[in-house]
Image (cartoon, rainbow, N blue to C red):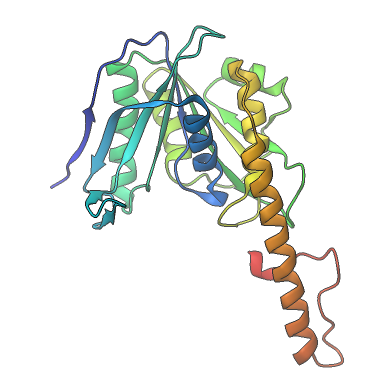
Length: 263
């Protein structure tokens, strides 16, 4: 039996809210941005989503207890553009195909019907980079030309991405279109890496301009440097390993080439 429910902790007053969705995915791009905005703005959680389509596990807490896997809704009061911002992030996405449809449909219904929202941004990574980039490109697609127009002016590339978008980042936008509200997916160019702070910063820079907010990105900059250092060290290790076992007709990786292990 399916059970997917959203439990409201409180019912804060909202004005024309915007939903920003940053769940775990490629490069942790969306989740990095969501967590950054929550911490920077001291956002308050007001609702939690639980589902039987999440992993059948519990998370051990630092206080010696446990909790279920969940997704969480946070509220940021945005005085600059007089539209409140809701951040949705969490521990996971659905582990079943059916669950992806059920959970994401539930999210859009909740946002539209319970919170009277009309615009959704989903954030993620787009895996096309051949090496770690200092200035990743930002790609997007939208439910309407109107929704895409202002982002195009900020350098987001529409109609240039190909393939499929997996999980919530894509399904949520499709469901917003079905239900008559606008949706935009914004993706940072990334390797298929666990954490890509450079891609997250590129997307956040565009999003901050779009929403009229300022945000301190020092934490992301520190993570970018840490990631660069780790990748460089791993590349050197790989070169040393290949140098030790390579035959005369099998050259080692040269500087600047894409290290295959990152894929």
